[in-house]
Amino acid sequence: MLADWGLTIMANMCPNKTKIPEQEPLVRNRNFDEVVLGYTEEMAVEEATRCLNCKNAPCITGCPVKVKIPEFIARIANGEFEAAYQKIIETNSLPAVCGRVCPQECQCESKCVRGIKAESVGIGRLERFAADYHMKNSKPEKAEIKSNGKKVAVIGAGPAGLTCAGDLAKLGYKVTIFEAFHTAGGVLVYGIPEFRLPKSIVAREIENLKNIGVEIMTDMVIGKVLSVDEIIDMGYEAVFIGSGAGLPMFMGIEGENSVGVYSANEFLTRINLMKAYLDDYDTPIKKSKSIAVVGGGNVAMDAARCAKRLGAEHVYIIYRRSEEEMPARKEEVHHAKEEEIEFKLLCNPLRILSDDKGNVTAVECIKMELGEPDASGRRRPVEIPGSEFILDADAVIMALGTSPNPLIKSTTPGLDSNKRGCIVVDESMKTSKEGVYAGGDAVTGAATVILAMGAGKSAAEAIDDYLKNK
Image (cartoon, rainbow, N blue to C red; front, side, top):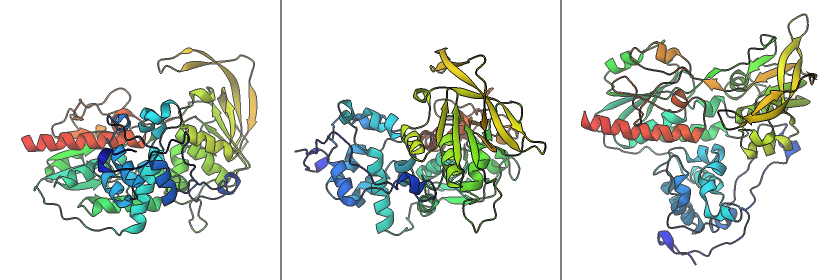
């Protein structure tokens, strides 16, 4: 029996996580419905009782937003599902999002004591369950929060900006988010596919923020419509820059300008935000028979799985290292394989071939082998001379990472950035410009949703301290 957190439950010592329902692979790879279907109440309770309610709660140390994990899980185990949700949102403004896309396996779940000899507790699955239960069984309501009379501006309605805005609003600040796109959500709406993160979920999370007083202004390209200095002149006493990293990288190889070569950003934006997968949307996107996706991260998996759903017969992942070095989540790689994505590992593109009209026809690749570790700690891929081969493809998607767009830093005097184009901040998320803070991908370069959220949370704390002492 366990009695921590004021609850009494019977421990479930099953070594494996409670299996979560999913669509069948060869059904789901032809639709954009959510792949993972979520726990039932009975499944959630079963999984929650696997938690040992450790007094030192090592799982919390692995969570960038410090969710009180054993406390919310204990409430699920006791059947108090709404109470579990309320415990989560004490520190996490986007639980339905985090429960779906956070890499829990290398964060909270990697610290789980159950994971030492068996599978860790399914913390992410339980967080998703609590958030979904709340959404299903409650209606959004406006909350009355006493205003402290101070205004803060947030640039970017992605994970970092939404988190920062939500935490500041709860403290009584009047927060306005300035978003460049016509829809709030950042990478949550333009980058992550519907089958991993339904946009209705993101919309509901954003509605929750609006209900605590956060104002969102869309179509506001900061650096064009307004500058950071002009925002400050409008009476905002502090500014948080969470504009992300939306500038795609390319290889610089021959043929990259051919018709049918996309950045993953463009490809996914056309599908996710511009609804190219729906017949009643007239969003132009090439329907291909064979598509090569270059890269090995989560974005590459998303692009490949989307391409398959659009009807491609063959979708290849071209990655220059082995599967062991792939930065993508193991779950995403597993799902991609189940959906018949073909992996071309230890090879790299040399050039993109095209016909006389400039349309992609193939990719010339070379085989690789792993040498000594590079600066990242991963073994450096080395070309094998004479191993070139041709891979037929009529479209190529470059999923090689992104860097921050230079627009904000180039239009903001006194805002320092490094050679990678990232905004420079100190340990309190403060930039070189007075009253201006930054976090997320705009500071680190492309990273995970939860790390951006952690940065937004830290920045909110720093802004609160700054304005209290101003």
